[in-house]
Image (cartoon, rainbow, N blue to C red):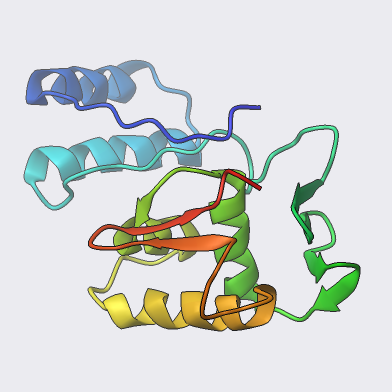
Length: 165
């Protein structure tokens, strides 16, 4: 399964066509309604972008349910993280952030994108919230939190999970 996120710029005529097509021929599913609402938000200007996800839960459905990155092991099914075989206790949101970044290794995400991917409600402009979660994660998963090797800060942009491990 592809573990990257692509960004596609849509012009307003294509968004309008997609929204109108969904209205007339989309299946009657929650996903279709949410996509149509997302396109309407783009047209109204209440949203500047949409993030789409394929599949349930957003986690990979590959043969292995474990992501291994150097000494760090993330068991997606059991929601467990360990480093060098020692289990690390994470809060549910810390685990979700770690999974999101690890499943998209090498991709740089803004704080807003991370928030939108992990939280179910609208983004509240509070950069310190994500920064605090990343800081706590680094203290728990990094051998040396002052020199992180897993979650890297991309100054002025956001964060990414190291794709060199």
